[in-house]
Length: 367
Image (cartoon, helix red, strand yellow):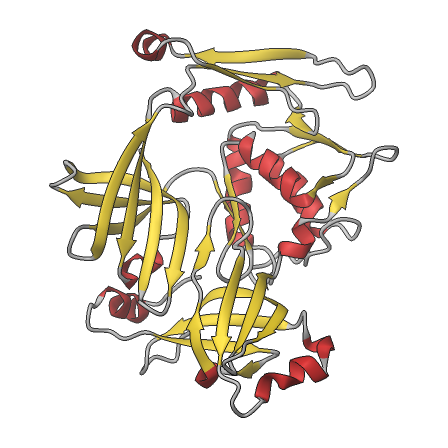
């Protein structure tokens, strides 16, 4: 999603009144909408579900009962401002269930368009699928576009409807800069599980954006958004050391025939051990693993840099000013009450987009 400057200006303005367009089966049903449930977006690969309550006094939606083949058809929620011929997608998915309520309304339960594909298993116990050592981006591309697996569009242009090609190519460059090489063997793991393991083993974020496309992020990027009490209804903060690690180890070169690893590499922070005691974490997954010692070593170094101190989280309840804060974005937060001054915050989750109230709930970690 690339909102125009005019759209962003209206999103920033407190006087602006956004509206929502709901389309089902390529028909605009916006006038029927009573309420749209919160839309979430996080790093658990999919954007999840959304419920849409609609009026049915003219029995328009009875067609879902008389023609149940319409279940599974395309549904989309878009945000717009009157006067602008621009629509920003918040959700793309399919209609999974229609509930005809006693008050005459209908609740349409829509599921993320990638959800079904993500649950598809690859291989099984007696016939596992092996992926030879390659770069993470190539491995993900194979999983998503192979006609035996994800079956998504394999077009290598920005017009790809399933994969944000610009995001993917930038991520590929980042992965190559780290000399990451991964191998995999799936005996029934779902596509979701494989993608999450790849993200975990490369210190990356993989998710489905509001356009219904796969998006990828490794390094931080500046979003130039400053959040304060003037554009947030609430700002809170916590700090935890549950995920702290000052020794990180990773196996590499797993041999699926012998069940042995070629070796183990690790990185440690002595200063962190002095401050917090020794806390170690090891990665020796036999579904996805690092193929070389260099790959494993660079992963350990990166993971250690992200986890060798307690992690501080910031939670924001923002006006639509927060609409352009995408996952992976490096934004700024200032709040005198919490003793934060232009602190850098990496957005890791859009916990909810409440289109009814014009609020966005964001969370991330200070970096």
